[in-house]
Amino acid sequence: MKITETWMGMLGVATLVVGSLAACGGDDEGSGGSSTGSGTGTGTETGTATGTSTGTGTGTNTGAGTGSPSGMPDLVHGCSLAMAEDMTGQASIDVEWNFGHKRCILVDAGTIVNFNGNFVAHPLAGGESPTDAMDFISMSDQSGMTAAITFANAGEFPYFCLIHTTTMQGVIYVQ
Image 1 (cartoon, one colour):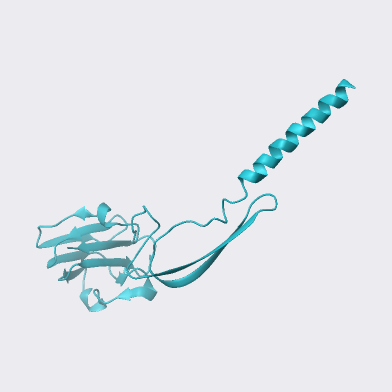
Image 2: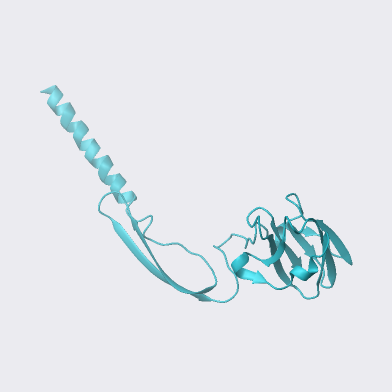
């Protein structure tokens, strides 16, 4: 009789614990989150928790400019303005174009940036990727071992190696 009562008591506690856990976890993924971003689009997120709870949420993102999730810095090629090496106040700077080059640089408008390196092995391109090329760097700028680029206007100018697109990259921030 004592064994049966003990098992029944343990079964009741186990049922209570499992029921509590199912109630706690039912809404985590389906409740959505918050983020800011750019562009126009519609997305749907669906989450299923252990048990029988399922949540679904839809959201539409419309806006302009670049964005990132709340509280996260905007990163381009692993750089942000806050991470940029301040090289303002100089008429020209030199950047050694290799795997250990300065990636995130802040300069004044009108600064000449001299990229020095082997442009046959490491062709320099402007933009975030080959499909997002920017015209501030042209192949005619890359004669010999130096590419001199004058940044006349304020802005964010990402660049990369056409061969090593994910390992040789950076951003020139111009103020």
